[in-house]
Length: 167
Length: 198
Image (cartoon, rainbow over all chains, first blue to last red; front, side, top):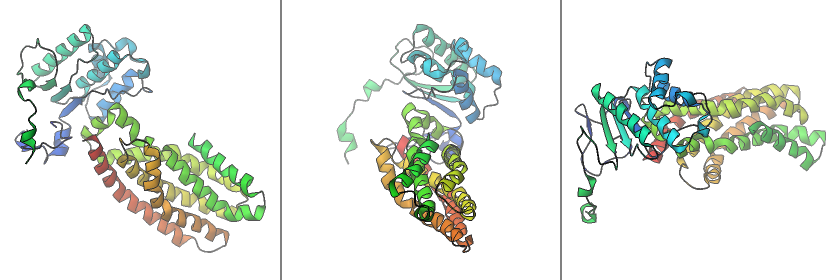
């Protein structure tokens, strides 16, 4: 919904003071979404998987930064391997490595730590704090509890009330 | 793969209706065009499906480019991998079926104008059937009727050439179909894709 894929039942989302339903095209480049699926193409190499999306997002990053992004998730040794040989955790890390190359200020992460090991989660945390340090924003849905330096919206307080949706 | 399918379907016809030169050369344009339609259909359901399955489609829709441009890029890639090889191999198949040389050129021209239309219109079907089971069959039902005009003018252009009649009107109509599909189908596909990722 925040990405503009779905329309809210009530209310609006705003980006820089404008409704996102009205500024869809200029809004879209500003987000990068990591969902449940990893959008990893098995026939492309690990590096190509990152490069393709970096190119699509018009980011002016050179090869250097693709390497840097892979390194941040310890994928540099696998860079030339076809992505279909990766494990679930490695695919997830590959998807997260793209975050750094797209140059989008707002990251929408939907349970990004799924199938990540501890080292992977640590990499993600480092990446998130460096992104925030550069003035970026991160919205993350997660089951982790020991988070620091963030606002928490506990969804269990918003229990589903069917009466609310019948008009 | 698609090319092999195309060749096999065309080769089946002489086996089924016999090797008589007259019948084959009379039916050659129709055989090749119908086989090209089926070959184009065969790969259509994979156009967006793999992206839909692995989550790439969400990201493509969210990418900072109009979805219509992405659809056009996809369609162009589809045409390069299906339409173009068919066009390249079609003269050979025309000779198999005893088509006269003056028909061959017109057939290549009509396929050049017609196969992009197949890819363009097919993309609408591929986008509409995302997420449904057995989408391949559904696409055929949705899209094959829309291919009929292309088939009619494509075949009649070749037939006209074989009878030494002017082929310009048919080719112009095919060109019109191409331009119409080029202008309209990216919008329709993009709308269907937005619906699919919602």
